[in-house]
Amino acid sequence: MPDLSGVEIRRATEADLLDCHRVWRNGIIGYTRPLGFPELPEDNPGVRRLHAHALSTDPGRFLVAELTNHAGEGRVVAFGSAVDRGPLWFLSMLFVEPGEQARGLGRALLERMLPMPLDERVLATCTDSAQPISNGLYATLGIVPRMPMFSLVGRPSPGFEWPGLPDGVTAERVADPVAWREGGELAAFDRFILGFEHPQDHRFIQDEPRRAFAYRGTDGRLVGYGYAGEIGRVGPIAVADPALLAPVLGHLLAAVEPRGASAVWLPGATDDVIATAIRSGLRIEGFPILAGWTKPFADFTRYVPISPGLV
Ligand SMILES: CC(C)(COP(=O)(O)OP(=O)(O)OC[C@H]1O[C@@H](n2cnc3c(N)ncnc32)[C@H](O)[C@@H]1OP(=O)(O)O)[C@@H](O)C(=O)NCCC(=O)NCCS
Image (tube, rainbow, N blue to C red; front, side, top):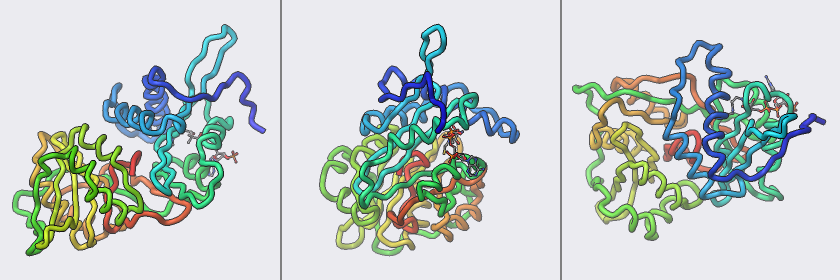
């Protein structure tokens, strides 16, 4: 049994979020610095917003571990957050301060965050392929790495011809994203592609902000959607037919021209889309992320997730 004396595991509050950001950053630097990776910026507002989102949608699944020293002062040394979406339990974050790792804190947090009973739930997460501890820890729960995800960064070369949208498919900028996410169409499409709806995550993406685009067939029915933001982030993308993924990505890259580079997380299952992106001039950045799950859930030939921290 690990010795966790002096450690209290409790629900996080908004007041803990800056500490969680510190633990997140130190946890990453702890293994990327020895590998010679570039230093992370002091502040990562996108990650802070993701933490705040997970806390707001799933407060019972966002836990911190607080260590009290001899003087009675408490310090957050680890945290974990997970979100429940339909049958899916998705581990968004799990981080332990480097000095406190390998003493059972990560596993202890995880055990308290898991759904009980497990029943038919799907457990899933994304890990860094450069991190054997997280991959090993989650694999013992059956969350085995099954699919790489690549960060593709850059802009398509001016002369590159992306496959265009097929005849009969039109793209429209969603004029009223709030009404769209609260109406039935988007939820039905997500249930079809992902097996669950997640209007709360659409709200998060729209507030980032990223622009929403809907793709429709000749009969007006939704055949896909996608998001792109002016700071360059593209995704999520969902399409009814895998053959639509490359044209929709190409449309999004052209429709929203960011100030700098575009960036999208492409699942390994989207094979020809990755090939097209690389041929166009985008480049793989960093090591791949590994998506792991206990049972298959979404069809990643037709879905590009929001980020490694949120499906
Ligand atoms: C990953 C992390 C959260 C785990 O927390 P931790 O408190 O260090 O881990 P624990 O001590 O609770 O458990 C680690 C488990 O991984 C196992 N493990 C460690 N190295 C391993 C390896 N190379 N292969 C397989 N399993 C391994 C340990 O044996 C242990 O299992 P046990 O409980 O059966 O003994 C923590 O190390 C961390 O923050 N790392 C850096 C950031 C990170 O990668 N976070 C995850 C983001 S995906």
